[in-house]
Image (tube, rainbow, N blue to C red; front, side, top):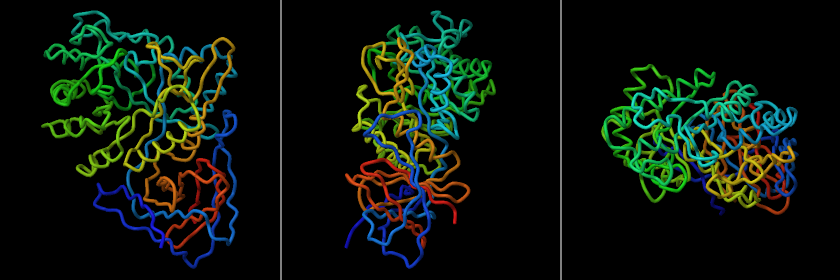
Length: 468
């Protein structure tokens, strides 16, 4: 007997995992379509290939079972992070090349369709240096708050993306408060938000003004996260914010400030690195905090811990806020890990998966001198675009997993647990990786229906099954 892993991530809904049974039903084969990308060749702006499955009667190499009645979260989207360096880099492209890049990333029909993207509040570690939107010490009322710096590179980048995909939604997060609001007096090298009433009040105004000013610029912000990675202190813009301080700030100042002003952006906790430390769990246990937020964001977290948090509060919405950044190698092994990370977070209950930097320049290097991956590299000297392997992964997923789809339970006879999604029109999409070094025949079983397809060798794939 062959035993299979069944990922039923609905423990939070009272549905535990159960063993999969792959006895072949006595039913005819129906047609399915396969999308795939090849990671052993040069990637271009349209890396996704598509072919119709070729049914055959030979025993399949791989069996996939989908349980459409075991439903989880509604998917909100797939996206990536805007940054100052990327906004500056695309300005070095000719108009036609820039339009081609933007279409490949954001076009919901012909491109990757990235539709739920991240915006830094002030400098991230891929700004040109550390800066905030309120640089005047002692300006507790935020009278000198200004988005002028953003309007040079970041805002034009976001506007251009939204022109291609007007349905795009945005989530935003600070890497650090203004330095004068911190114990260190600087945005870099960690420190904490000053534990003083006027500092909490000023920072709440700062975040509210960000939402308002971006709305004035024609860029609506859907949700705000309180602090990027509040458990770390590094030489780039960072700020430690223990669970007790985050809960105090949100419940006493930020939530009341947004309510008084009628600010529509949702307040979300995080973005947490939930691994060795349990910041999210501890914060959610504090009085009043859960009622003051709409959800929780995670990055570089253990998906099992996300599932555990969901199991404690099934109504809690969770999303992934930053994909694996790696070291700028942009190689096949890293692309494989990205795909597995994406599946794991959707299977853990996340409604959004957010890649890290969508665009970097030819150095792929931060202002603090380390390299990281990106979907695209723009060479500012030559005005050329290089498409990294991560773009192929994100393009495949973005084209396949659309807002409004529901996660459904699935399992496979080999390899990582797939992720499956049921669209409102009844169509199914299954993401999985063919680990074989040769093309593999795959049978998909959905209730009493089944389909056969051939999966390209050692490739990430999406199997599409129309509503019968």
